Length: 621
Picture 1: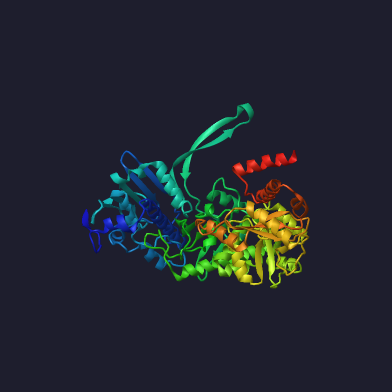
Picture 2: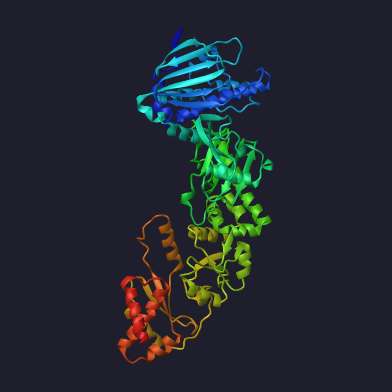
């Protein structure tokens, strides 16, 4: 038996590991299983080169929990270690066997480990660790290494007959949660779901049926519970996969989710290595609820679903997997580090997504349009946040009108240039964010020959501001921001049937009833077919108010200012109102016309709405 001290520069290595290196206790299982996968991958590489003779046999990694003895065991059938290798690799912290192996076989193997400290994460949950190992090399005895959580260790020989390594963790009192089988299975599913070697955790019952009809017999069979899928489809070539393969894998990632619209298969080996699949989910009109659905892997080892450092903000709305050994991780493999490669990867992914959308739009426009309700928020978000994406997306971003017609920006500009160009030579894009609530205004605008766009997306206010800035020759005006005849500002003037004195009299009547702060009364000579009274809101103030609300700000500083536009050419104003003799009836009539306009804007509620209904019944009588 040998005794010795682990070769480290400080005796406080284990408290450092526990407190600072690994921020989360559960990481130990990822590290130890990853090491087992490394040992197995090394064996497969050596066998392929003829350095391991004969069949390598079953190479399944097995994880087991013994509650009674308070142990967790990670057992592999990989290359194992000789006593000399145990001395070298377990007793010299920060000297990684994976690094040395990679250097020798760098063009032939995919080894997970980059850090010699991975093994020592075991001491986050164990106050004693045993390693029982035997090398694949002939005529080598088994070796047992034991350490009780300080720098002292013991090494002894054992009578192990088979190659491989068992790591036995004697779980400490402050980590007994990890003796729960459900907890361990959950961690294996999270971190090891796609590792390239089968991982067994206990058994499960498989049910089958024999016979037919009333003679059918149920047969239950205990089989190995294999946690992982060692050959995920992102590691395969796209031309070898079918649509069903992608859908099946999506369901594997997100069980019971709504199927995705389409996907992008990422596969690049220069100037960095990256594979993966990004799915476009059905977003509808939502942003926040979709985030943290992209899983980041490094050589099939789960790292995180916080991918904002490597994926542009708008792409976090996508789902799927990105796997790259070139992603710079810190020593615990828990966090991304800023690096030139990250920027290259970000640019590559953005380009691939933009190219996929452009291709779908060009080749299958009808299909693209059918998905626009779910794609719209994603494309607009991308244009707002990424300049390079904007440059590509401006050709396929779609504008939808209230009749459901879809047009590109250039197509819509061409469509409205003759009817919706104002006196400043700007194209006026009239829109609504509430088609049902703005129906009267929409119909009035249509009667003037205007096309009305539907902008009811959560980010449309920002999108309009963005496009006004980018296009320069376009302005967006909400359909209720002015009367229909004035949405496209011209110098045309319609003559009023009322003289100035009569107009002033009508205005005074309305001023006596419209006491709302921020409301102004305007007399306007509109068509007799237009409404007698309309309420409009200044575009700039209304848009600023809505953007403030979207960003979570309060409404302070944004009063509900609006214009009460009285149509001096409407018969109810020009004839009926002015011919009434009773001042009381005039006031009641003005109030009713004003309330009709408020009702049209959804401004009548509660007691005021009840009063209006009762008054309407009186008028009918």
